[in-house]
Image 1 (cartoon, rainbow, N blue to C red):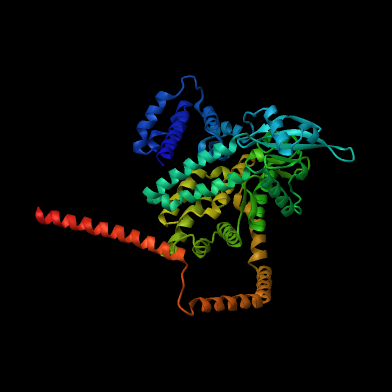
Image 2 (cartoon, helix red, strand yellow):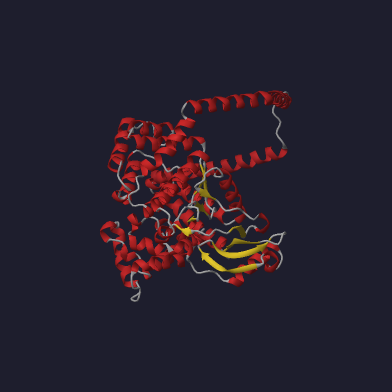
Length: 523
């Protein structure tokens, strides 16, 4: 345990040193920092490199040095120029797909090990890396079909050692979260341990490319009738734990707005598609892409949104999907009372609070941003207000909504970059209304009634077997207790050891108390 604490302290100290050395901490205003942290900010200025140049341009370099967990944070911040500033956001964009590749030889060795044969027997051509991120890099390759046709594919290869590095970071984060929850009430309300566990599970699944291949297939199946979306096909014969092969996509990244315009596409229309596609995935399908930063989104020649990198996916149950739809609908229609009631019905706000008071707080958040375009809304101030409200009403972090909330912020940031005047509520309205009509209206009532009948039929079909198993359990219990309950020798021995241990500590406590009383009497 002491070794782990020392290791954690070392990792945190190293992270602080790297950020200070690259001049990143000097971006923090002393007035905005807690009083105890201000001396550390002064020290960080002394550590900063003199040749660091633009400190904002060093943020991505610092996060890259710190490892994949920190890079993921940087990818998220890159979509929030309103929170971190435009220059910092532009610098952090390199973390999305422009990190240094780990080398052609290493990638080819990984492919050979995965398929247990030379690379030339798997791919007719295996080119150099065309994109590299924190978890993996992508190569352009060619395969020859049995009919002789050559096909271009994208080959994703896992970065060597990333599992070990990520596991080490997550272990540190978990212990820090446990310490914080043990010592601070606010950390317990935010459920920091659960937050870390949820994020760790999502990224650990990203490191098994077989799971990503399955996510591609499910997402493609869900969106096959959506003409504005395309999901690349998976080449299952050339995919494994550390290698994933998919259809090659010729498209324009959403981060290249000028190229999108030059190709004849309307950025405002693409922004609408991005927002509505995410909402359909979340509400209609309950299965959504949870890493929709610009490096994973393209526009093809047909103007379709192409989604790649399905390593991190989110799921929502029926309860969470209804919560999302009704909350958005409440904001769209400015029905603050109903929006508040949904929070209570879902159990997200403790019942000892007043619905009317919470509705007032929701109104305070919603009114200033209703019917405003994206460039008129300060997301930093909005997030600050949301945190204040959740603390005021004792709202705990909901792990099942973490990926949803994170992705909604990222998607809004991507849409904002394409259309600064985007009206989020008007864009979301048709998707939300379709879901409300199909699930909470008359059609939804009929669906739920049919589902209920199906469940009753399933229960009726299993009832005879259930009764038989119940009768068998009752018979066995009657036999076991007919002459009193009999315990095995092992159980009796275990109970004896437990009782002896309890008696020892009880007697010791009595002797300590007696000695203390004797000391007091003699004194």
